[in-house]
Image (cartoon, rainbow, N blue to C red; front, side, top):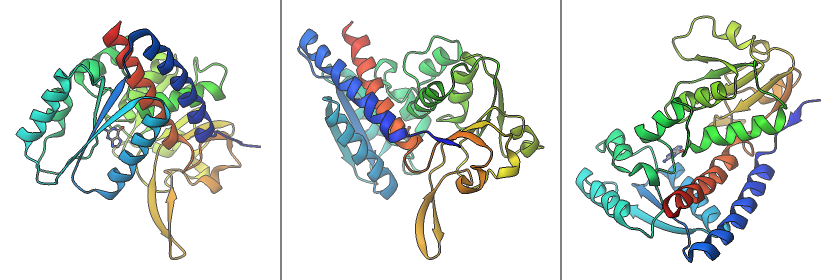
Length: 286
Ligand code: GUN
């Protein structure tokens, strides 16, 4: 029987933990840790993510500060807001929701956020700390994946972990975290040859490509643990449906454990953002 890794239940547990630590933080410092969330434009999916983040922030006892900017915001207006949030001592975490409208530069925005408040862990300084094995603020989705894996497996050491996808947000950071957990890591991507054969040797498979139902049953070794990061909208029998990068129903005969979509990685990402906001505030106030 395949174990369903219940991301929602684990995320609730993390948020309860964070809420407990936030109370202790408030008593000690007489300050409420605060997360500023910036959304530029009208992208409906980003709007849903941001609303969920704000809801969870409040459940965690953190303060949320939302900035909704119009689609035609200029780079210098956005730079100005980030600069103001960087200097504001009552703000401990800053998150600018990606993707940004095409006329704005994502690298410039990521580098503008002061590393101590970079709760996404995307700033080159935080990426460098992760790669050199001294992580402080780690990207939320990879952090959530690692928590789920560690709950599921007693020891990751020596396991062959295959990560599909090389994005800065998921693929690259999760490969680094798996390496730090002593896995043997293979990162595969759209130009990889023999992708199915490589996946068949995986003890742990992390799919983060954004290709609906790409990973099939014959790609997998019996007993594999699968983490499905994909969130794809498809039309099935005339209805819209959310599916992952893994053919969930097709692979269950092979998997020892798997994360469902929805209800797997998604809720964990937001819970880890709460954890990172608290961690950032703890570092700032000592
Ligand atoms: N868009 C999709 N995932 C993320 C994320 O983890 N952080 C931010 N800032 N934007 C995203």
